[in-house]
Image (tube, rainbow, N blue to C red; front, side, top):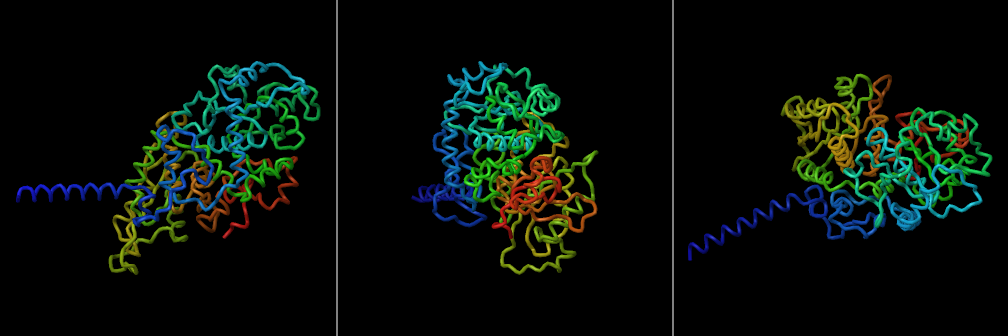
Length: 511
């Protein structure tokens, strides 16, 4: 009898410990900041952005992201949701392997008379260039352009995009087939490429006012060093011609969505899609970009270990754009000045006697630092290790990786970068570096208005609160055909961190 009692007690104790261990590793649907969550079902379809047509196990992040993120206060419009469903059906009809796709590639290299129908299937081909942040922002820009113009988007897969993102469209693929007829020419679609629209305008080999014949394909060069003729893409007159071309190949690294809003023929449609104008990337990013299971494992392991038990989380993204880059004390001082001035982190008390804890239980504040260099997080960690915080709160500092050099197109490096972007987007508050596309993606996915670190020179304040969560179009076409429109449009404004850039704002949301 006694032996049975002892065994029973041991079994019960083991079960209790196992239950406790399991509870402590639950994501947000079970606990939020240490407290039991309500029994409301999680918003796994993100307000209708996503469809239920996918197998959950093939891409865990698609339906599990809502377990790790608070529900977004920004709801997608019904018009956007219907437009996404229409697009998905179009992609199924026109995507790789379909009869329509096989017919469409036959016309490449020939000129077509505009009076001759090329069917409903028109295409955008995306060339993968520059870093991960640039690629994500450009892809979202091109996808919106595809929605506006009734095209489908296909991705150059010579870089391993498949190791980063799941397929976003059900029953089809967004990957450009490797036997695409122009694959060998894609790298020649550069600034002076003979098939690029700006070059053709400059050489008078095409005219935007003459549409008797149009080329079967055009390259659009929208890289940061693009010139005035390339920027004609944003002019209404030129759009009238470009819309007729069956295949558009984009060599781009910019978030050019703000300038799409300045094209008159798109404004009504855009306003219906996004009544809240500063939610464009927030909705499109959450619809398009679902990390693969390998990347999702990196994200969830880090989150459960370092962020899930915190009462508050702060993300700090450090990108030093100077050459040579590295650790600079003035940048560290700027980070400390910003977090102190904006009360994002408690100060360090001089002695234990200076701690003024007014709460019964000290808070745990988890700080996620992302940087190529380890010194920023190490100095912050050491500071809170050697001295107590003035509030008595505990500050835990974590940096997932320290790559030192950016290594775009190396699979593991890019996977780590995507995981860190996503982790930043899960924090409660965010500090980002100026002009950094890495930070822009994180703030947009998270629906966060970050504090942006100024370039550390001639500034009276170390950082500024962003006026919206939208990314900046860093090299905007603010002259030429859109010059007057820029000046009179209230919902497009210069960026806080780049006066020559443009970003979307919604003053109804400004605080």
